Image (cartoon, rainbow, N blue to C red; front, side, top):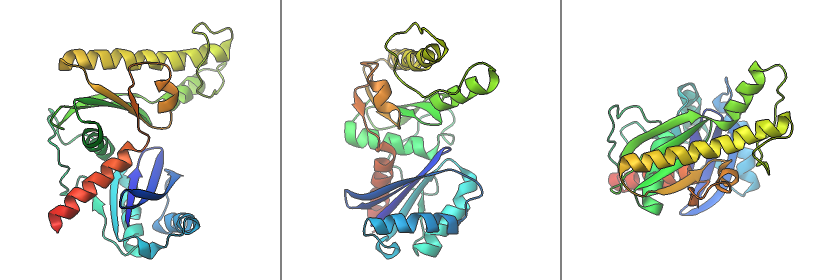
Length: 258
C-alpha cells in the first residue's frame, strides 16, 4: 500500500491507498517541533482504527512546502514504515513540463495539483486551491505547468484583519445573504466571501483572456464547496486533487523503476 503525505503550511495530510481505493485519510496541524516519534504516536493508532498496520505500507511519497518538516517526515518513513520515501522535487519524473521564467520555484503541492488536473480533467485547466494561500495554477492542453497566481489565503486574511483592527472580531467564513452588511460581522463576512468570489472571477477571467482560450476551472481545499456555490466560474470541485496527483506521480515513477 502507498502512504501519500502532503505537508502544507497549515496542515500535514496523510492518506493510505490500496490501488485506487483510499483506505484512510488523516490531517494534523503543521507544528514545530514535531518529531518522527510524535507523528508515529499520532498516526499509527488512527491507521489501526481502519485495520491498517505499519507493515502494510510498502511505499511512501511526500510533497512538502515546509522544509523544516522534511527531516522528521523522512525519519518517520524509515523508522516506523521501513520505507525510503519518494520525494517530489528530488529526481522524480512528474510527467509534465514546467514552462516558466523560474521553473524551479513552484511548490510540490502545486505541481501535484497540475498532474492530477491534467490526468483527470484534461486541459487547459486552472486549479484554484483554497489553502494557506489562494493559488491559481495554470495547466495547458499538453499538461505543461505554465505558472499561476498566489493570493493571500482566506483564513490568513481574516486573521490579519482581526489582528490589526481593535474593534473587528474574529469571525467564521460564511456566505451572507446580502452584499451590504447590516452590522460589523455581516460586513466582514460579505467582504471576505463576496470579495474572494470577485477575486476568483476576476483572476480566472484575466487568466483565460491572457491564455487565449476557455479553461476548465477546478477548485480544491476545504473552502472550495463554499466558494463554488457563489460563482459559476468554478466547474469542478475535487478536494483530493493533491493526493491524487501524488498517487499518479508515484505510479509513473514506480513503472519507470520496474
